[in-house]
Image (cartoon, rainbow, N blue to C red; front, side, top):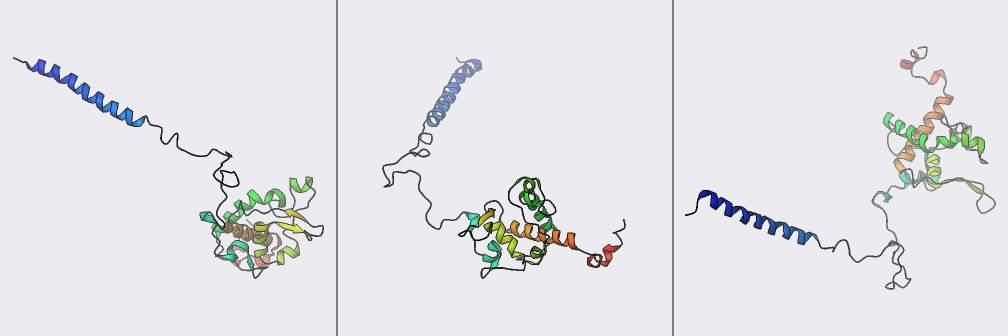
Length: 210
């Protein structure tokens, strides 16, 4: 006659066997190397499959990254019929100017100086004099000019006749919306350094003496 204790003692090995079988099944299914040893080319590995012998394939012509689709020409270039436009493509807000100041400080101030006068350590030591944004020519120029220069860089003179590129393109570093934010901030700098008392709103005049 089996006692309760003996029945319990017999059930324990059975549970161990079942658990071992389950664990073994999990281990066996996890030990394959299909994904680890998948057929693929390593970087710069040659290939006899393609006529040029390269395993790395060029992108299909016209391929664009998700954030590089340029459907708004003016937003992306600052140009209208090849000439700089003089209107912002979106409203100028305090947040936009703050963003412009941040981006200007990162990308522009190292050459043009924090106030835009073209005075900086690079200007003092380099062979090229950065533009002074407060000269009359740049104060009068359409705002799209700054977006165009950020996008395409700037050439002094004709590049085909002795001219040279004094500023390279920042298109890969600064997205279009931020180019306009920088341009708006440059306009704010120009106003701040060339404003008179008459330009101050009446409600702000009382704060000037504080």
